[in-house]
Image (cartoon, rainbow, N blue to C red):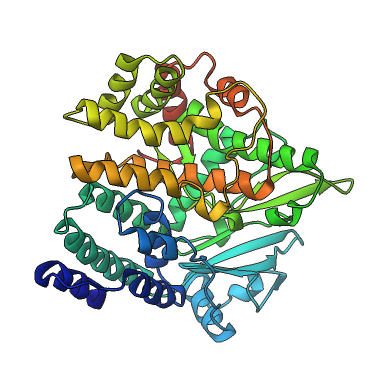
Length: 429
């Protein structure tokens, strides 16, 4: 990262050209082999217009949070550090080979003493120091980019990323997030949330019930009715917690969901990962809904008031028009009362790229614009969710699905619901 930052700075100061595509490919190749948060951060940045140069966004968007697993000797040491020397006697079985490995830890399948299947999520060692080191590297890249006449001021983005990635290290907090989602979705049989085993969990080990399921992409070639059912459940899993409780799952990565079946047919989804959960002030939720209604009714005053409620300042005519490009892209499928795909003729990898480029070009003339920090994970989640719908080739009436979620919206009611569910889960936010 330091070398890349130096080359970018040199190009700016001395006026020579560098091959951005080559630099971006080298960066993606380096990050793809890392354990740690920087790979996750890179994927996030790729969805924000002009947070990083477009060549870098294209390459970084292709990174997958799937690192090589650590071996059995490591697992034994880590489990002993978390549960003590007799840890193996607390399980009826514990698989030596992990079922999944990602940027911050790996998951092992196990069995409780009563035979119940378990998932043990074990954090890699020294992740706290790795997080701080990686965030420092990110700050260097942001600092250089700010000197290159960017369209977006990245300071609030950096603060938000730092706060959320540090949260992901705290598995006790993730256990609280699971409790929140179990309460929110307790009456929704199409969505399954794991149960935490507190006696087998610590700040760096999270033991949950194992949810059996198949990968979401295994259903890409299923009949349209099956694909639509899964997309509709995904829509509910994301928008219901947000519109009713001000909570979102900020990382709709395909690996964070599996599909459960009944009688040989897909019935619903398992939600597997709760590290990247964002809790919003109810006023922000109200702003999201107000912007939607402003765009739907072509009410400019309502649209501007929504932007201002989020923290945008100095809204000129040009800036409002530019923000509306992105808003109409995000809200577009929700604005027409008809059955449609999330986007026509667009691949999942390219979803949002054209609109992001248009915003980038326009903001270059107006910027730098300070983006409120709440948008970081809102954007990431919206792009990721749209990508899931594209993978499934779903055709739904997104207008009706969305309006069902915001019908009778009341900010005071959301505030009360949020306060109660967070208190019950042990979260102080």
